[in-house]
Image 1 (cartoon, helix red, strand yellow):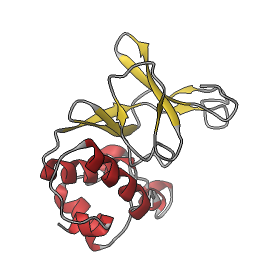
Image 2 (image 1 turned 90 degrees about the vertical axis):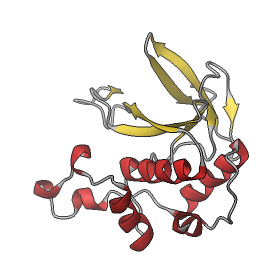
Image 3 (image 1 turned 90 degrees about the horizontal axis):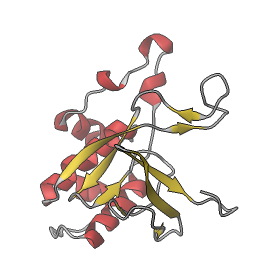
Length: 178
C-alpha cells in the first residue's frame, strides 16, 4: 500500500496493461533515478551491482521510508515487488547498454561487455524500464518485433532481433534514424 501512496495512485488491483502503464508513468515521475550511493565517498565506496541490497526490506526502507530514488537495479526491483503484489507476473531482464563514442571503450562506441542494467518483462508481454532515465513512459510490446511503437509522450521505439539470442530496444531520433 505504501508503494501506491508514493506513486500517488488509488487502490486498484486490476492487473491490466492500462494500469501497468499508469504505474510506470507515475513511477518515473515520483521516484527519481539516482546513483548517489555509488559515489558517496569516492572510489573506495563505489558499489557494484552485486553489492547493492535489493531485498524487499532494503528497497522498502530506501524508496518508501527514506523517500529516496535509486539506480536501475533498485528501481526496477522495487517495481518488480510492487507489480507482483498486484498480481502481475514479472521477471528481471539482464541488459547491456550501448555506449556512444563519448562513453565507449577507448572512445569507440559499442555494447558494454557484460550486462550492466536490468529491465522488466511483465506478463511475458510487456517490456518496462523505470531505471534508465531515458526510456519510454509506458510499456512496449515485447514480442512485437520490428514494429514501431509510440508511447504516450511520443517516443518512437521498436524491439529488433539483434542476434540469435539477443533483442535490442531502439529509439527513433529526431532525424528519423534508429
